[in-house]
Structures are given as structure tokens and as C-alpha cells.
Image 1 (cartoon, rainbow, N blue to C red):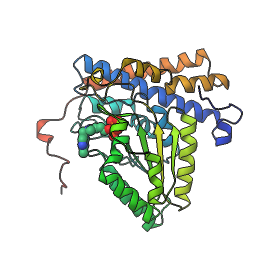
Image 2 (image 1 turned 90 degrees about the vertical axis):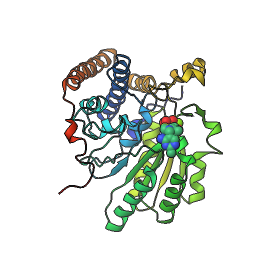
Image 3 (image 1 turned 135 degrees about the horizontal axis):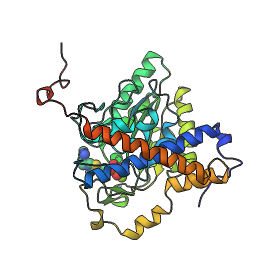
Length: 334
Ligand SMILES: Cc1ncc(C[n+]2csc(CCOP(=O)(O)OP(=O)(O)O)c2C)c(N)n1
Ligand SMILES: [Mg+2]
């Protein structure tokens, strides 16, 4: 196991013990929320689930560098770890999953995973893969033109780098030295298509062609990701331009609740990656550095379970939007 040396560990990155516990709680919360979503799906209560499982450390390690409400983020559908860290709540996530009127993302109109918050500068995704990148780059251009110090985080899977939008955005960001960080969560599959059939060469290596740094990082090591992202965000805030981060990780669930992954990947492969689960690895680090013991672990886990029980009950009882509201907030009004 590739664990960081505790001595040189989080202190050297400027992280306090409390920061680590906050990261840990968020990673665990994202996992447990996701697991409950699958239960609701199997109970016939939730139509569709798309998971963050396996990618939580890549998400939280990166987003820990964001200033909510000041920086902007263009997440993709798996980024529950990012949106929970920034301030969306499990209640928000379940209201969205169950398409209730109170869903803050879209008032029950969008598919799950289309996160959105004006207050937190989380910009909703469109369903076509990769369209977030030119939009994110445009926001970074706005920051630069206005002389503001905001940074934009734009996220996606490895297959989103096969489309033209990503390359155009990378090129434009490189030309104008824009304050944008591209996070590619390389989870080895695009639905049933393995990386080797989707990506030529190396993703991180492509940044060189656009004139800015590209780094590859172990996406299941939250501190390694945090370190790479810290450098990237600092570089952007200094006005030195974009960075591409390729976080190597793995999708532990099927692509979505509508996908049967037994048709294209071996169970043994998933087991190998389960041994590298980002949660177990972080727990090991926290235990070795004396920040977490069995009792605290249980306390955190119990707290999360109680919160999820409560908000699921709330969301299940929350009303749907009235049919007459269907066209509200779709077009500009007034
Ligand atoms: C332009 C476009 N083509 C195809 C799809 C269908 N689709 C949705 S997700 C996905 C796979 C994307 O894979 P990746 O970018 O690696 O992200 P992951 O789901 O693995 O996290 C595909 C093909 C789509 N939404 N948009
Ligand atoms: Mg993928």
C-alpha cells in the first residue's frame, strides 16, 4: 500500500488534524449516501442512480482547495464528493434523487447528478459528455478580464477527453493562461468501453501540447490528490494559468443503475480495486497518525447513518412539484 509517511504527511501540506477529519467525514458521507441511493433504487423508489463510489478521494482532495461561493465549479455527474464538501447536504441529494419540488438542483426536473447551486457557484451540467469544459473556460476568462482572483474547477471522466470540446477548452485556456483546473477522474471505463479503447497515449501528457502542466496522481490517495490540486490552484491564483490533473481511480459500481457491468468486466478486477479503496486507505493513514480510533470511527459512522435515515424519511415524504409548474424556471420570466 502506497501510504504517505506520516512525518512528511499532512502537516507538510499545511493541513491541520481537523482538516483531515473533515475530509474523512465527507468521503465517508458521499459513499454512504450513494449506497443508500442504490437501496432506494432496488426498492423501486428511485428511478436512476449514478455513483461516486471509488472516486471520493479524488473529488474531496481536489475540492478542498476551492473557496465555496468565490471559485466556480463545473462538476460532472459522479461528483457528489465535491458538492457535499462545498455545502450541498445529503437532504439536497435525496430530494434530487427522488425528484421532489424542493430539489435545489432543478426542482425535480433533471436527472440525478446534475448538481447546481447559485450560492455555491456550482454550475449545472448538460447531459452531453464534455460540454462543461468550454463553459468553464469561459468563466475563467471572465475572472481574468475582471481582474478577480477566482479559479474554476472543471471535472469529467477520461472519456470526456476524447471529444472536441475538451481539446478546444484546453487550447483556449492555454492560449490565454486562464485560471482553470481540469480534473480528469480516470476510472478506467466509459460505460462498457475500457480506457485502452477510448484514450490514445496519456491524458496528463496531452497538457504539454497545450503549453501547461499535466500531472498524473493516485486518485485513491486523498492527500496526494490534495497536494497536486493545491499546486494547481496556487498556480492559477498567481495568474500563471491552467493545470490538468489526471486522477487514476476506479469505478466500483456499475456505470449506473441501468447498467449490467458483468457483461464487460471481471469480478476479480473489481476485487483488486476494492483492496485500494480510498476510504480504507485514508482510515489507515488516520489510524497510524493517531487521528482516528475505533470508537471515533464508530461515532462518525453512526452520525452519518442517523443523518441519512432522517433525510431519506424527509425526502420520501416531500411533495412533488405540481404539473402546472413544469414550465416554470425553464425560460426567462418577467
Ligand atoms: C456526447 C455524449 N455521448 C455519449 C453519451 C452517453 N454517455 C453518458 S456517460 C458516458 C461515459 C462517459 O465516460 P467517462 O467520461 O469516462 O466518465 P465515467 O462515466 O466513466 O465517470 C457516455 C458514453 C453522452 N451523455 N454524451
Ligand atoms: Mg470513465
